[in-house]
Length: 245
Ligand SMILES: Nc1ncnc2c1ncn2[C@@H]1O[C@H](COP(=O)(O)OP(=O)(O)OP(=O)(O)O)[C@@H](O)[C@H]1O
Ligand SMILES: [Mg+2]
Image (tube, rainbow, N blue to C red; front, side):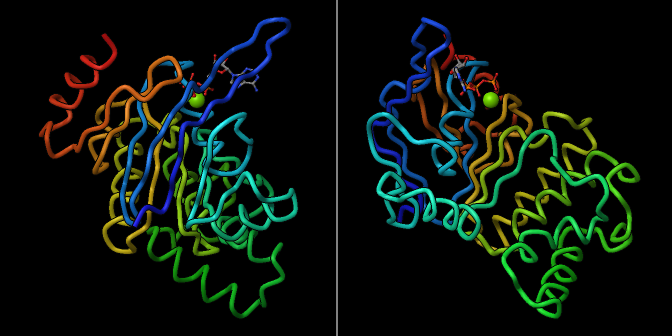
């Protein structure tokens, strides 16, 4: 079953008196349990596509469906609820609350949703263990490594049990060791929880953790392939470079 369906999506932005076509008729479906990397040069429309899937922005033309639900048909209230309950979002810049500890940051979406203290504690405990963060639970963001902070952000994204995890360059601010630990976590979440994951990245070494790669160029989908076909990250890098030519 396709959990995410994007059909002939067009999105333009105005920049002063200039019209920018960020997405120019993109169609893409993501199966339940798939782990997809979206690659493409800067400005190719990757973040725009991810934001449309998250219901953060609306498309000018076309359809975006998550779990069979058409986001374009929802009003603002429905979209807000949908985002809170069905989508986990992770950004390059962690976006943690600096005054809250790791466990408080993870718990935040449940507290905002009025979930009981007991239920929240049980969920947060389980997640911190999955994320390997038990020893950091009372640490504030400035007392954690970049990789740990990103794992907290992933925990916060997952605490509501969303159907889909969307990540925009989640390793973009990390060194190679921390980047690897975050990639391994995403791969494990995909394998063990059957999470549907869509991750934007420039890095072939990061994309190689996914099952599939979709490549955007100038707001269009130019290629889609299974990472199995390309072997290691060097094979993937070559295939990616070919797409951009
Ligand atoms: N809010 C906005 N207002 C105006 N133009 C925008 C806006 N967001 C994106 N754009 C434009 O749309 C195009 C696609 O942007 P997008 O952010 O999706 O690219 P990207 O592939 O994520 O790039 P990067 O790798 O640099 O993050 C770019 O030309 C960008 O300048
Ligand atoms: Mg971007």
